[in-house]
Image (cartoon, rainbow, N blue to C red; front, side):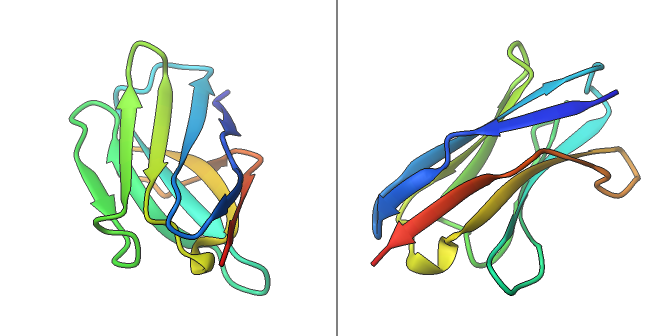
Length: 118
């Protein structure tokens, strides 16, 4: 059973940076993609970024392109989200997610709060 544990959230001023981590366990992930999603109060959960575990190809939401970078450390089974130039509108609970190739994201972490003050 796949388990995902996020860490690294917190409070930061606008323009600052944070790095989120997602430790994955429970199986090998060579045919998986990993993603980050976020949910702000009163809003739907939205896609932020994703990375294919084997090839390392990435995709981003338009709202974070050029500011956020997703990466993975295969040896540590960990996915990262480096967030730079943070804005108050980035405030949300950030969730790590996993999916097998060709499937929808169906495994989620517990979430980590990111708060950006103006």
